[in-house]
Image (cartoon, rainbow, N blue to C red; front, side, top):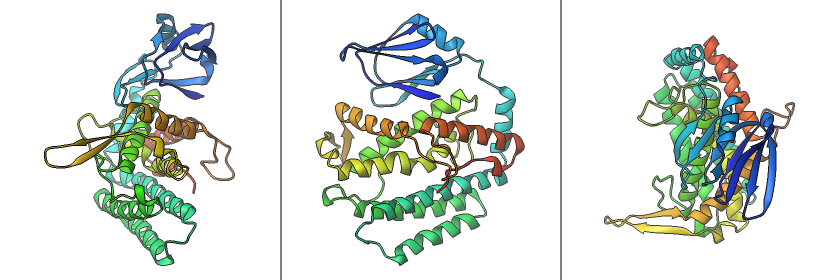
Amino acid sequence: MKTIVIDQHQVKLGIDGNNMVINDIEKELETKVSLSKIDNVLIYGNPSITTQLHKRLAQKNIPMHYFDRDGSYLFSMYTERHVDYIKQRKQAIATMDDAFCLEVGKKILLTKVKLQMQLIKDYDKDNLFTKEDYKKYKEMIKSIKKSQSINEMIGHEGLSAKLYFYMYSLLLPDAYRFKGRHRPASDKVNSLLNYGYHVLYTHMKAMIIQHGLIPGFACIHKDKLHHDTLASDLIEQWRTIIVDDVIMQEILKGHVDDYVFDEVEYDNGDVIFYLNTPSKRRFFEAINDRMSEYHKYYGEASDNFDFSYAVNLQLESITRAFYELNSKEYRTLVI
């Protein structure tokens, strides 16, 4: 199963038998994809879409999600067939159980921190960092494990994130070094991080909806208006693999040198960096390429999966965890 991403404007989408037809007018290229192989359709561009395709996707229970040109979520078109109120009740009960949420949160954040440490090691070719530096990471991992509350756990993870981005910055060429995370972005790298995380978040939200879960009932992130907290929870361990690593490679290969950033100066003197639309499209393609790659996300003994399939497995596992109120059922990435 795969997620179809449409980020072009000069495209017509239609149906031919049991195939979705993608007609790229500009490139004069027609592609057919069997509906049996599609689990989501994400629309970032402004394609022409036939009513017949909408109906067939609804019949096959395949949702279509729409986003604006900046990647912000707009709305979804899907039937109610996939909605399982028993499943959602189990989710609601589980996410109100502090002990359950703490254990699920630990699994997610421990995996995230370990992946961050591994990325730093992989790119530290000149041994810039010492054993003492990595020892700090290990101490933070121990602190997360020992946390007695969600707030305490989040606090320890926040400290590890500061260390991670400090080290991440030092591994970049001088022109791209930055001082911590900022939203909105006060530098080019933060602009890339913010946009990349948003793309990841919207992909995750679409798959959560497809699984019939409630995007706003989660374990780590607190309730907030218009915030799909479960999507924020579940992308935590994917940030490093899908976004941070891609940004590092794009910079080291010199690709970001060709990106264009609009700089907006506000009355208080702050300068905010935004990727312009063509550069967003290029960066989006780089992220989408990474999502399409096949890796052993669940250890050497596992099969190779792309991002969508691997996330579907995680969503199935967290659904089991909700039903059984057992955090051990939730499947995290294997380092």
